[in-house]
Image (cartoon, rainbow over all chains, first blue to last red; front, side, top):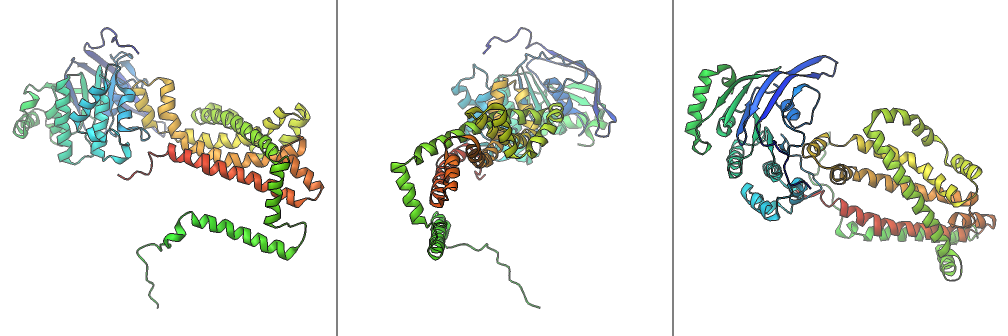
Length: 250
Length: 265
């Protein structure tokens, strides 16, 4: 396999989506995205936050080259290695946890790397098991490990902690930060949860309801390590004041 | 009004009746009924199990039973492989492409409803009384069933896993091996199960009509001689072969390929 990354892949990604329209079951056209402009800085965590149903998943699918029926330019080369964490774990049930990770892992990713990563996300004991034996929280950890094992040029996370109880979700958020900081990667995370967004983001991008576009792009400068519950409350209060439409519902 | 008591636990059979012992008892029961019926009838048209088994041993040691079984088995395997290969490729393609499905669906309906006998006769008339015509005719009878089963399988493929494979840029062959084929495994199993039994029945007809050997030919011969002992002997021998394939080959293989299932959380 090709170990050398294509030139220019790790530079910033410039996403320009002029128009994306869904065709409804009854044939009507539903505009999902309009005039979406966003630059993604290298090795930073960009969090897209918007109301449910505003087209966040559609956006990620376009960026991952899973959907090419839109007008505009993704700005992500097709050769870019993508690590994608879906809303559901989407593991292969007939492969063990270890095989699921190895299947997509980067060629430079050694078995020692796998053991290290598995320990970091707390699934070391689960490697020989099949996904059906895992709880949702554990399966989510495996999906996270799988995405990191690809050594992605761009890591995409589509509400990766949704439908977990708050304690589990919070543990997983901290864990994501730990493994992400160990090896910073250009990442886009999509969520409708404001506290999750504030905890994780280097830059917080607020989205409008459908057809979605960028309302504001807010850098969050407090280092992630210092964002305890208190700091998050303070940032939240500040943002609520500046963007009441985006934060009052959450 | 009477009060009905509902048991909260299902009735459990005694341990003895839950093991393989039940299967053995069931077969012994069948042999007993056969034995009694033959004793009462006292006719050469209904020989008892002892006579039939004696004939089978005799034919195995001094007759043609084993070579004839071998020839029929080879025809079953050849037709099975041809039918499964062509049927799977067509079925998966039709399940994935609506256009192809529309184009081929009328042919599928025609083939599904064409009597096996018609296909066999036409194959012999057009291609001669040879091995290729025989195996081709049997395969053609089975192909539409395989197509229908695998088409359902291809339609039921999980789009989520497909997306995962595309996002992670799995090469086409890896995707086929790791994502697509494992999802189709139950459909392959269903098609092969019903396939083997259907094929071996049609192989006998093909042999009866136009081959100079095989179990079907022997049945035809002994029908003309009114030798019911031989007919039952050959039938029983081949059923034994098929049972051996089912229990020693198909079921262990199935347990192996589905071992990831049925694991408790």
